[in-house]
Length: 351
Image 1: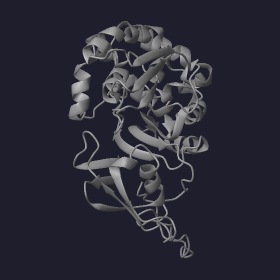
Image 2 (image 1 turned 90 degrees about the vertical axis):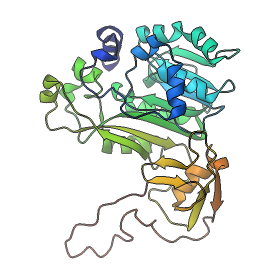
Image 3 (image 1 turned 180 degrees about the horizontal axis):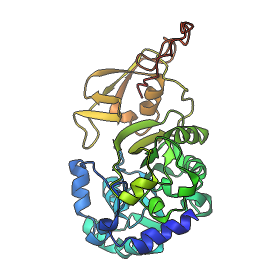
């Protein structure tokens, strides 16, 4: 039922972003200058039917092969197509014919606009819950992005599992979506407005953490988040008591990540060499790594930088030969010493 609701809402009910009734499917972040420039090269018809909730433009993607899950009218595809360059590629998958029609109509227009000899984008009609049926090659993508779409599908576990399979080792799922502070009542899932506005299908954040790890994405990293205001009175009444957040996460396909942030005395030094980030690189909301500064990291963060496309942009200090316990700031050093009945300190992960 969710797929039919989505096709109807985004293909027939909404004719443009002005028709949205809440700010859940809206992007509030100010894009970096390179992204802003790329956005201006996107056809106005494509921009008019954009319903994303975040900026899904990760760093260091020159030459990368990217998959966009739920690409809609194609705005993110066409932005990314400029940033990966002619040697890279972007594949968009969407299940709404009306949205795909807008995206495919302007393929040649964008190729000419970008000055490419050959288009580096393609669009595939299909359900992202059934990615294994779309002829996409396993282990063929450097990065997978998605912008406020996973909440719309029923089998979210299938999406995470398929994404993990499609990524190369060291690849990344970088996506924005809507999350709830508790499980949304099941009877609201088929409400066409709440579902189409990306609210009733929102994952409880605890369920997201469990599903991501079960798919092989250990140690999810929160990049940005913002609370959502439900300004539509009818929607707010139905969802009374539930708080929603728009958040961007990055999930890495890396073997050997540990359940907690362990300290091995390691550090990194950022070279300042990523396009658009000469002064600092933000791995996530807790890792603002300034250029030239020795920055202590846990073992998981080390792997996220050393075993991915980011490796060439860093110097690495130390190894995993000696363990120093839990990384400072990542929760209590020991679970013991709480026998007096006091509640244990809440984890405050460095990640």
